[in-house]
Image (tube, rainbow, N blue to C red; front, side, top):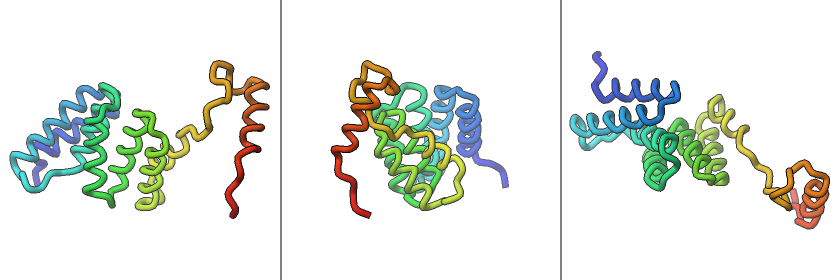
Amino acid sequence: MPISPAENAFRKGKTALSDGKPKEAMVLFESAIRLQRERHPAQPRMIFLSYFGLASALADRATLHAIQACEMAAKQEFFNAELQLNLGKVYLLADKTTKALAAFEHGLRLAPRNRALWIELNRVERRKRPPIPWIHRNHPVNCWLGRMRASLVPRPAR
């Protein structure tokens, strides 16, 4: 069975994205979305939209438009771990760490052995800001104040 033009543009976009060319990938994903709509207007491919949002966030920065594209795709196909991965990456680019962690964890519930999700989840910085941000986090004063702050916060019962 021959590959559709939309699928071909999508594959080229993924290649461009992996080669570090997000602007080129964004154009190709947009083309894939347009070609898909021409052939099957009632059946949009959410994976095209998700990758468009990711490429857009990498190319220009995580704009509201890029976030909404990934959110819509992940909401429509909530069972697709790859869409959760893209959503999490876009959230990270937008400095929304809590939402990124939630997306990665949701993706791992869907696909527990997905290596890319594990890599992204482990890459996320979970530490709080240092008490004195203009001093390095490993400075003894920041370490001491951080321990004091942590001791004042009650721990949840297990």
